[in-house]
Length: 399
Ligand SMILES: NC(=O)c1ccc[n+]([C@@H]2O[C@H](COP(=O)([O-])OP(=O)(O)OC[C@H]3O[C@@H](n4cnc5c(N)ncnc54)[C@H](O)[C@@H]3O)[C@@H](O)[C@H]2O)c1
Image (tube, rainbow, N blue to C red; front, side):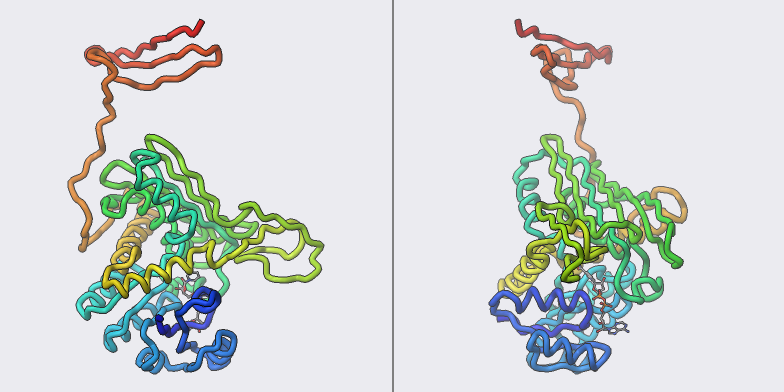
């Protein structure tokens, strides 16, 4: 049984508590810290948490606080992690790990030096669809990964601090891009070095200092490309979609809107439908088991199982730091309008990879380009002469 202390009684703290206590599981939330007494008290009542406080350190040192789960605004992650280091408590931190890679690296190294377990709560890398897709990718079902695109767009976050660039550390790229980058990175291979980033980011709608819309490309050392599309200005709910293209196949994932559950309502009832749903009348796209579809139970299972086995979880602080470094390069690129290098003072993956050759033998004289069955049934093969470079086609008639 894991005894959990949650720091932060807001949106994500409640999702985490739902995932931990809502399923007859053996894990228990024993301590809740929130900034305001009313929030802490209400949270404690809703989830039957025996101890609540408005003092963060008091929550962390509590004898029943075995795992500290950080669900605080981004500017408080480092402070909370350092308190866990001080008191040698296992720590699980929500995304993004830091406001930038410098903060994230400091947290990663401090936990490693203290010898404490440190898990990165990147839930979208634990959704049932993601885990199954990743298994297929790792089994080679779609060949070598060439392009992995991930999109998260919604009408904007639900609390004031997200919109304050100092507290949040960035805009849509940091808030949503962290998910997209880690999803693409996982499909491409987490041991493949991200080399450089090109990013367009702009503030198209909201009166804020950060970007509310961005698109970026992350180039990996093996020639693969990651793509993220993020927005705080998208209308129509929360759009979570991924696309993976390999030499042998393709995967399309849609995790939230229009996934097979559609409901029309006149507005009677006026209840919660799904995260970031914009209306409670008309056609609705509810999500059956939202916490599960968003990966939270699988994520906590991995964290606690890994702790018990003494191994690193699938998503560690180190992963959070790599994601932060990619985001730092994206912000730089949005300003310079150039490809910017990903600066990784600490890299534990492979190095020296290169793009695989595009030359596949057809016969002694030719490279193979492609083959296709035509509407009349003929088979056409397109080839390139190895010596002259001339491209020709060979047709095999079917009659
Ligand atoms: N899918 C996900 O993994 C996901 C989703 C949403 C949020 N998050 C992350 O969770 C963290 C918290 O986000 P949230 O949506 O729960 O925010 P929120 O505003 O809903 O809640 C934040 C909570 O932090 C506490 N708090 C303590 N000190 C505070 C301070 N100085 N200012 C404001 N709040 C303070 C309060 O209890 C507050 O309720 C962020 O890092 C965010 O990026 C992750």
